[in-house]
Image (tube, rainbow, N blue to C red; front, side, top):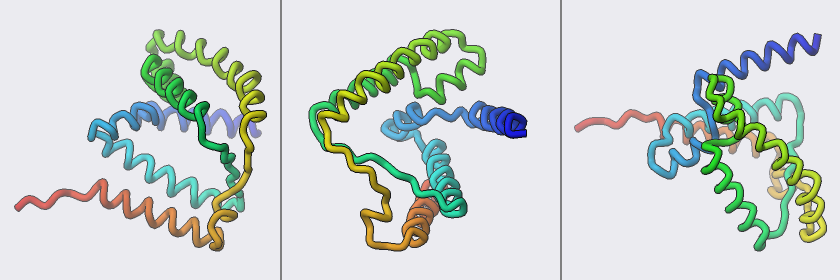
Length: 170
């Protein structure tokens, strides 16, 4: 039964991604060029839905905080260069591949050794160089998790309204 649910979810999510033209990396570049209203709307909606989902399911998202330094700058530059060379993120690559753009098959196949390199070689080396803390937002802010979720949803809703507000013409 889980296989059927997974298959239905995958088809639905794939349809949504394809119809929306969703790619976070391309959306980020559109924001910097001042054309990111559509992607910003999607980001705010995703933030609201995931925040409510985490609260309803009682999940506690845990992030890792690493120290700042040369490796952060280097990895940011490599990540940006990879996005520029590939034309998008993993989600955008899968979308393009699903639409039949076979150039993205090369991008997809190239991601596999890159992910292996990151997970099996670079991450263990970097864990030895940085002090890593695992924490969530409720540990950082002295507020109840529902209050934090409410503030996040409120900010995202305000951003959503602001981005989609029609300009009044004189």
